[in-house]
Length: 598
Image 1 (cartoon, rainbow, N blue to C red):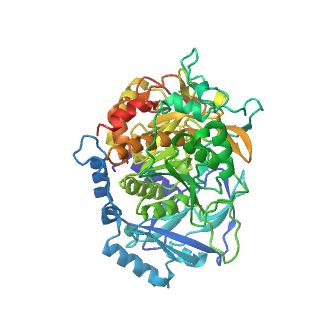
Image 2: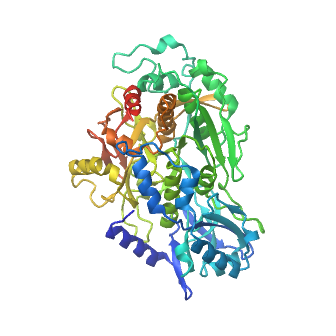
């Protein structure tokens, strides 16, 4: 992808501002000032160990992305011809030159092939563990420190800048976890306990078939949104799933555990016909799913998917590598790097999930540019396999008022886009509230504000140029200077994100967030896949070119509300696409007819 000259200048400026001095023959590979909520506490002990997870340069990423745009274009003759693992690897495996140069560099530091602890299937990422004194020598005298998160007390050992030998640098795209202060935060509001009356059984089918005077399904209550409400609101109530040929992936990070008993309580109350349905669990990189510690995020995601998409199979992917980390001599540091570990695993599967729902993210500027670029490229590899990847757009509108400043040392007031929603190879999901009509979810009523914005890292992809340019023309000079007018815009679509009724630890709670809207939209996509598979077609795979080609057909346009934030009104919802709710919320029956046409 190409970047504007202003963005490239910005990246260069940031590197100059925060890069530490380099020995001769080294070049800065990545650098990032520690955000304000991280405090540098001490120099990391030289005999502490750190994992260097190397992302090797891919043979032909540009070729992969070009092919992906062809097979995801509904008007292309090869639409839906998703690539096999071997076909993706042909683009993404490192070249012989890259393998040779990286191996030689490692051997110069006493690291032989036998020291490599992990390899991705395509071998474009490898991991070695070294003491910090060796890491310093390998990375241009990089300064490793212990950092502490001011609010949580979480500790992390990392460096704000690292370098590579000039001849090696082009062959390593990033070292995951270094110069990286992203936390992989879950996007959801604080939860509240529901009253006894609100906990009542609403599973009686007859209750939900009528509509209220406002036009909303009678089962839809602003104070607590249920599976029945969502099914009737979005039109899936009469669809009978085929249930074969795919499964839904649900991402779990940060020691969030999904509880089986809570799911059965949820189904008994909200989807009685699906009682007994179970999700499966796969652990990655030392992840767990401890049943004695049910998590609101994990339960929200798994319960929403079960309530809307059962009997389609679902898998909860619990990925380790999450904070807090307390330094322990001789123990490798925790890099808090869930995305790369999860992607390496999923890309190695013969049959990856057809849909992947992820309700996590970070302010883009807390993520080093080289890292974000590499992870986004890996998302392209996964979606080229026919996987629809959905990410939550965030819960702070255009940014929390207290933190709307650049992290380059200049402290310029700015909107704060959220990664990975800013990656052009994923589908970003915003949040709505109310029912007739739906409006942008905002904090005064739903405790969260639908995340919205424009990337500072990724240029606007071709599939969304027309829609976004139309919005910007209407917006005019409002918010001028606070966002990148040429960046990838998000979200792409939206769904209800306010006050979902879920079970956690045997009790009902109300939870808001794009953490709720994302598994809702993922379930809708899984049902569309279900119909396509039954008709002998492929899965929908990379969604965005198809969604933008519909130009709003199949979605209820949300035209009221704002993505507030940064002490501004943010971006207003308007007719057509907007960066508050994208094209709006799904109309399943219309989307189904469109999905079966191609």
